[in-house]
Image (cartoon, rainbow, N blue to C red; front, side):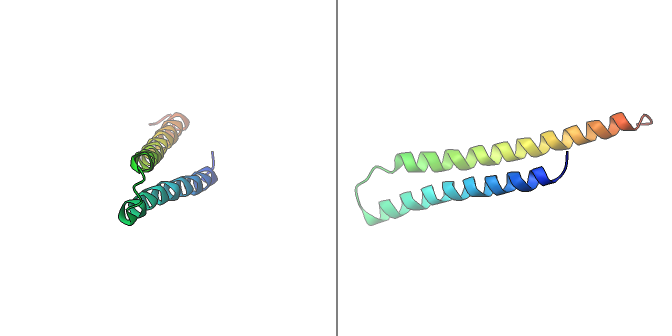
Length: 79
């Protein structure tokens, strides 16, 4: 497995993180403007999106590191 997969993953993660941030900023602007719109869905969606992104990114990095260490141990019989 090459490192280019992480380059592509980082692009998708950055794009999704920006969408979550825009959702939170939009809800803040709607509240400050006093439009009377219920923004709880925007806040919940933005926070959930950012939380899921960070969780999956960290889990993926740890999983990839673990697999690379396991693969290198299998290649080296001396340990």
